Image (cartoon, rainbow, N blue to C red):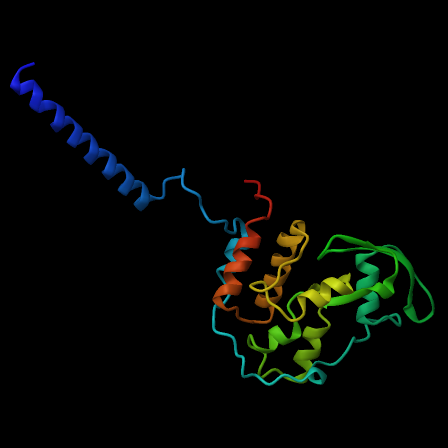
Length: 219
């Protein structure tokens, strides 16, 4: 082999190394699709999420449970709890005063079947305490009672799953039934936007991840 040919080998190796290194750098800069991508929201929910105000929680807002009232009358002798049970159950029957006497329900949080209404809690997707520290500090009592009885913010669930959630936001609690993550995050976001409530960054990120489980929207 000539001396000229011998020199070409290390030069070629060096050139190849530069090309490889440059390709790795470019892939990192441009987001190589082969790399894992964090889950995120897509479709209409993503656009709604962008409308959510991100802010630090107002942990100093004073909370008193009695300021939010109780189940309100919804007409036909039914209160809010009874109406939720009727809407979310199957084969629901009622007695005098709209009291639920029979029916079957599926607790959305933990996908548990229930055939006794007394074993169900009616939970707020956006907890009352969460609303209080997310922008409701100066609400009137009427506004608080309206929020408390908003049917879109209420779900019939097992007492155990409700106790597990407490007043936590999505950053600290998610439904054990992953199949409900999309519905839970969508409902939660809807209520936050309806009442002009904010979310902290961890809460926003958790909502984005759960909305990422929603089925893709057909074009």
